[in-house]
Length: 148
Image (cartoon, rainbow, N blue to C red; front, side):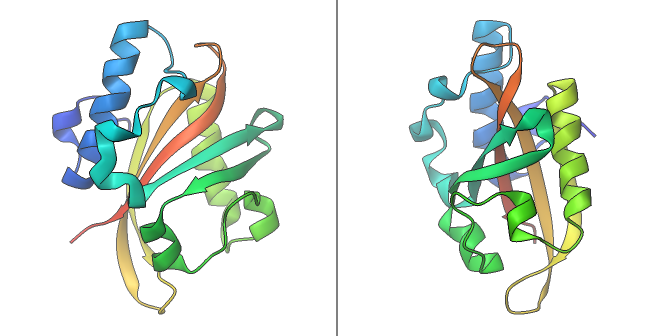
């Protein structure tokens, strides 16, 4: 289910979504990765990932992964692709990312996941499209935070 209104987002996601939404309003298109200002959501940097879209969404490379995400899941993400890491249920992740690439619209979802310590945690995941040219989705900004 897409979320456009920053006030409808969970607190951890609000600053990231507000910044992305402001960029979209200013440009009238998909925000450009180069226009991101990490200072706008500095309190959430540990919960943010930047993924590069590979072959129109056939795979995704993790260019930046916040420390909270690395600590939660214990994975060495940086410069590796989704398929290379081989997460369990990686097809579900591909489908989520592909929906955002295809539609150019944000996606928000919540679900149970297993942490590195084998604990069940509820994750709120906000996936935002980014572009090089304002039209084609070339990158994804993902804010992943535990809920509760």
